[in-house]
Image 1 (cartoon, rainbow, N blue to C red):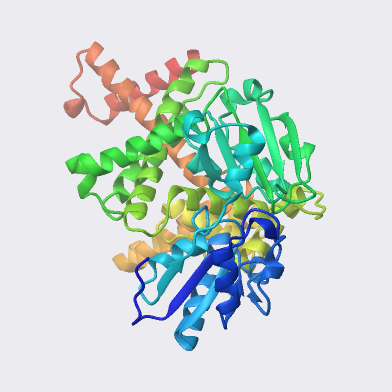
Image 2: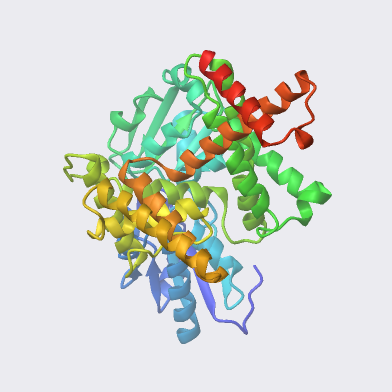
Length: 491
């Protein structure tokens, strides 16, 4: 192995899959020769072979994500190597099998990373299962990345890093709902503490794997076959988005900024489809399915751009919103008791302010919202601290007051003052809507749709009667309008 003597050096050794008997002599010699020793974790049967070692166990408690742990381990080891010239870093199993911290070290240009070969848990797992991994085509998966790393595969799968029952539960939930029932009875082999006196092999089912055992740091799962692939449909969709981004000239040219108009357009089309839903007519679902798909593509498009830039991925997005929803629903996922929806919303706002470090009630309201929604949200925030009319009566009286001020400003001939007062009047109308528990954006949109529908009816009726709309005059238009309204009532 090539060694760059000009760079500080990190020597990485593996402690094998179980007891000391699986640790190579080469590794033992390297440990004995090292002056500065580090352990990724002391929770391993052979960790005692590395005396006077600094461990990184504390990072697993303080960091928010495993990626954060590995990044901090890398920084600590690089700093130690720069200070001392050379350090030894010992990891469970083999340094070359699912060791993210080692991958970070190998990619770091500040050091020379020397890796000594070691035995991994794979040999013991394949021996216990009685299979040849090459002939069987087994795919090795990290349990923390199961939803994305196993996408599109039905098996056989060997899933490592299944150190807790919540990891097993997340793995189960990653499989498409469509295949849930058929996968329930799929065979699963739980391998625990291989190569130790406490070795345990449990044969169970996909449905029971997160309750049949108590997972620990030496737990892995073997799945011979699933009836439905992991996240198969979404994996195909993700692959399609990437292909378009890489091969379609239009997609290649797009940026986060250039896609904003399309994101807004698709959002409004989803709203139209939602408003067109008919409870007793499943055929109206088709438009919503299509529009939700178009909106989802916009989200995936932005994620793909970020992935190409090395910033984040769709997995970061889904994991982030998953964790946020868990934090903000302590009444579901923790011991918090609530009695009403109002308490749920109050807790949500309190948790959100703490997470964001916000000092103003208005922090976090997007200024790019449509103006009616912007006003509505601002009023709700103010109402949350008691700055509000006690009921709708005060809000209604404000409309009359603001109307008079609009007319007074108009009479003065001051256009800017008139515009200001008109804004106050619209703000007061939104306040009335909020007190009546009516979303003003939805209400006005419905009113515009009604106006459009009736005016289109006027156009049709005028054509039927041979009336030229541009020359018919106000009286004719009023009569046509009334006739359309009457026909709607009659219908």
